[in-house]
Figure 1 (cartoon, helix red, strand yellow):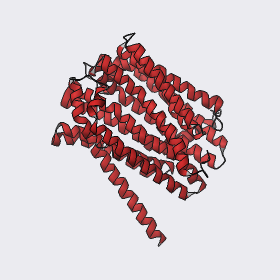
Figure 2 (cartoon, helix red, strand yellow):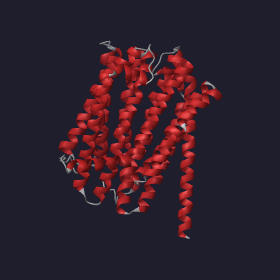
Figure 3 (cartoon, helix red, strand yellow):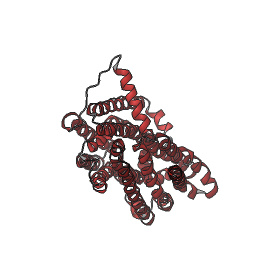
Length: 449
């Protein structure tokens, strides 16, 4: 693929389709867990997994922050012919993510009960949460390898390989979920173990590519010493600065689940958390659609921005936003019209948590179009290294609007208000992005005059 000369729509399609399929396969790992757990353990098992979900969001957020930052820097370096710099950047990111995952996982392994309570577990759900947590923790370092590796495999010109790695991971998880939970009867431990083994497979495959098969972005040895450490920390700081809004985007998911779990527990108890958990199994799919659009446009935008081809940058943005709008409308329609069928994949008919989820799903899905558009818009700012607007809008949707909405809407609208917190936050954020764009557009027209 030639990011500088090939037709933009063709480039975007080549990257987007395998990226979307790969990301959906990655999301399917957690969703399949939920389906098997819902039918073997019940709503208590789903509630327990949902309580641990913010951990996945934290690790994924850090992985995306470093991965996107590293990808943008590597894209710009490749556009300028600095191949060694691009390779070194990837190696720095891999080392940083590995150290972070090992340290944080070890702390949670030592203090599982405190971690469970911090995440919002009740005394009743504690045994479930603790079991799942202890068996899922070993997967996080391999998750980091996958997150970074998939970015670099796409940038290295092999998006189909990235797709197949995630599909293999998803198939392995599905088979192991069935094996461990039904023939073996291992319950939540089986679900966590299946996810861990599948994630290890994905992590090892991506690392193997970066070590032995990469065309351009093969890992470069890092020299850590008196000179090496300052360069290492400078590189990581730059990656984190560029990718910080991606981490905040994932943090929005963590805040959504963390605060949502507490609010649902307060108003509706364990069944409320179970109902919210079913909806949260689908939310990562919506997140990954927006992420796939943003990540598919990112190397095209960053590369052409580095070359100074600004018309190609504009065309890339138009295609990305049009794709986001189309997928957003389709996703909102599907999730609003078919909640009984979608909830039925996770919980049996008549389950109190299932009835609550069917009631709340249409309200919750109202925000999905804005959700996808916001992720795509923030991804555009990241691709141009425009960190301030990217971070500002990520903070708006993640904290400034979402947390107050969860607190105050239930007091005004009751239970419906809890479900409407996310849609309100996303729609307000989109309005702010639109106002920012109009202001920038007006200023540019004024300067030309």
